[in-house]
Image (cartoon, rainbow, N blue to C red):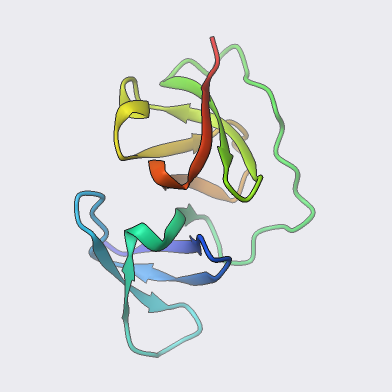
Length: 131
């Protein structure tokens, strides 16, 4: 299935496009650039800060995600992620996923352009579980 993603690399680079073969169990996946045309290229998951599944490529630079959890938000384990670059995100992950090498993360703010993220555990400085 075609998935619109934005890949943030640990070195600071960003690639936008679609993928048909992302699998968190594999070391690489292919990205077809969003700029139109182009040749798919291979992305190493070890090089990724995170893979962002997005509503659209433009996003909103002025958007500031809320930093709290709603009482009705009960699915998954509430966490605060802190990446090595200092970025912090609030959201949820599936029970037990915090112990895996990577996991899917769902932002706490439904207005966020990010639908979900795949986060390699090695890109995190801290994963705080919130009671």
